[in-house]
Amino acid sequence: MKVIKIISLLSIVIFQSCNTPEKNYSKEIRINLNDKKTIQYGDYFELNKIVTLDSEEIISNIQSVGQLRDNLIVHCRKPSNLILIKNLKNNKEVLINKIGEGPDEYLNITNFSVSKSGETFFILDNKKGRITEVDTLGNIKKIFKNELLNSTYSFTHLKGEIFALHGGNFYYGTLGHQLAIFDFEKDKLLEKFLPIPENQRELLFMERNNFTRNEGFYHNMLISKLFQLTDKSIAAEYSVHFENQNMPESFLNQNFDGLMDFVKTLNKSNYPFKLTDYNVSEKFIYFTFKYKGELYHTLFDRNTEENITFDHLSNNLYGFSNEKVKADFNKVPLGIFYNSIVFQVDPFEEIEKMKQIKGKLNDSEWETYVISNKKWFELFDNVNQNSNPILVLLNYKG
Image (cartoon, rainbow, N blue to C red; front, side, top):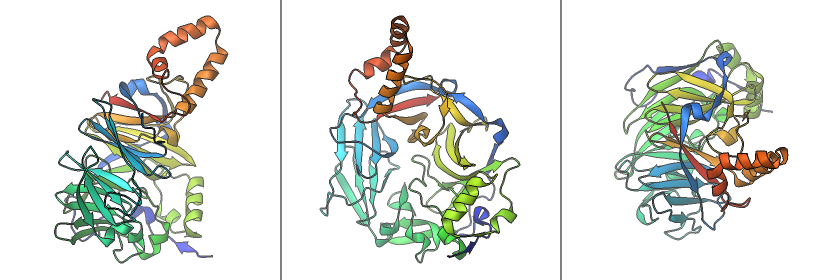
């Protein structure tokens, strides 16, 4: 069995790239796990909008949600393999789900990115090796092709025809870097960033959400930094510091029997790792990390530079129950834009919660409960257990 020795895996020399970064410092997000809390959503957010997805197409496995003017862009991975465009003003929906070899068809809707112009968005199909620019009606405006896109898993639009690309096969190909900046107008690779040491290639996690949707940030779950991107450079804007629990060199210089052994050892260790699910708005940053096999969430206010880290929450803004629950992967937001954060609600789970609550209350208590949750019950007059997921938009109070 193959044994791999890690040399400073989590402390890669970040800025050994083709370009010198704009700055070599970053703002610290300091986390003390002794201060972890249980939060109530209502203390930090207020209810903005509840959005139903009314398409007859089965919407499942939602990967992420973005916003383009008055439209939500909803990306679903397999088995759905589609993008749904939901107009928030007239409630009309457009589906992009044609699978095939034709010019207006897709083999794999891998990812999407909203254009900097705010008029269109881009769809990555890495099986076809192309990026397609479309409008909110699903009309194709332009197609970009390059074999580099066959090994791209996530991307973001920077400006004009310039994109940042993160690739799975970059790890094993000739690029040797995590991040590439490519100009399709010039058909030219402009820059490569974040070199991957040879002994670390097999231990890097694969991700599809390395880029935040709005402000051009990049992250990797094995690096505790959040990078601001331009078409020419990257710079570490934020770094996460765990007080008294940052991983020492002695831990990293062990022998591991491949990736699974590495992850298993990390899960048993006393060190947080796997920082991911970053969402960035003008006012706040939201991300998750693993610690001793459990998922933790952090909400960081960009103005006060204060954060709260939690592993349990109570949802007192929407839903049939506001009991304390574990902050697991089902509670990870699907996206952030402007001042709103998006969460998903499973109708089947909600109806099951409602049945459980009803079984515990007498008739008078149930009547009072229905009145106090009137809007949610009205919503479920038209929703059943087989309905598509519901999206809930909350506004940050900070």
